Length: 357
Ligand code: ATP
Ligand code: MG
Ligand code: FE
Image (cartoon, rainbow, N blue to C red; front, side):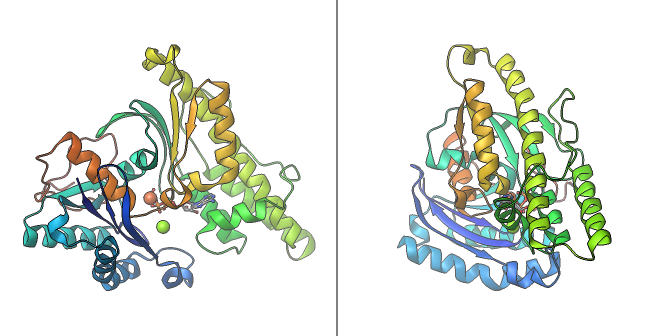
C-alpha cells in the first residue's frame, strides 16, 4: 500500500509518502524551532498556528516530490495522539478532510507506535523485539509483539530522557532542543569531573527516573557560579559530559533488566539472537547508541537503530505505521476516531469521538 502520513503532535510539521516495501517516496520535516526559540520551549498555541500555516503547502510539496496525486494513494494516516491537542486536531482534521474528499480511508496513528515501528522502515526486523523508546515526552521499555501489540516493562516515573537533556541544555544556556547541543558539549568534556547521581540504578525493575539527576546538574551549576561568578566553557562541557554519562549508565542498567525479562517471556530466543531496537529522539545520541550496542552484544542480542532522521519526529514513521496497520487490517478506517492528547501505547482501543478520553 501507498500511504500519505502527517505528523503534527509537537513542534515538527512533517509529511511523507511511504510504500509497502518501506521506500520513502518523499518526505519533508519543517522544524518550528525558530518560532519557539524566544520562549525556551514549545508553546502549544504557537505550535498549532504554525501547523495550520504550513501543513497544506507541505502536503502539496510532498505529493509533487513523490510525483503522485491522491489517486495513487491507498490511505491517509495522521498522528492522532499522544501530543499537544491543538496540533493533533490540525493534523487529524486535515487528514480526514482529504479522506472524505477522496474516498480514501483515514488511519489514526499513535505517535509512539510511529516511533516503535520506525526501525522496521529501513531494516527487516521480525516481531517480537525489545524496544527502548526514548523521546522528548516518553521513556519506556516494551516488548513489541506486533502492530498494536505492546507489553510495557517499564517507564519513567518522572521526566523523560529527552526532557532531561532539554532541561539541562536550558539551564546551561545551550538553547532548545537540548539533546544535540548537550551531546556536542559532552564530546569535549570530562565525564568524571562531577559526581552525578544515577537514580534507580542497581534497584530491580525497568523503570527510569531522571528528575534527581536534573536537580543535581542544577545544584552543581549553581555551586560553580557561587564559587567563581560564572561557568566557563570547560565547566559546561564537563557538566554535559557528566550528565550524558549518568543518563547512559541509567539506560544501560534498566535495559539490562529488561533483556532478562524479555528472554524469559520469549524463550525462543534462547537458541537465536533477539533484536534490541531503539527509537525516539534520544536514540539519535551516539554515546547512548554505542553503549546500548554493548549491552545488546553482551546479552547475545542484535542491536538495531533507525537512521538519525527517523529517530526524531518525522512523517515517514507515521506513513510507515499506516502501511503496517493496513497490512494487518486492510479494512481499517478510523473516520470515527478523534485526536487524543493521552494515548498509552499498550492501550489498544483508539478513542472514539466523544468518548471523553
Ligand atoms: P514524544 O515522541 O515523546 O511525543 P517528541 O516527539 O518531542 O516527544 P522526539 O522528536 O522523538 O520527541 O525527540 C525529541 C527529543 O530528543 C528532544 O528531547 C531532544 O532533546 C532529544 N534529542 C534529539 N537529539 C538528541 C541527541 N543527539 N542526544 C540526546 N537527545 C536528543
Ligand atoms: Mg520536536
Ligand atoms: Fe516523538
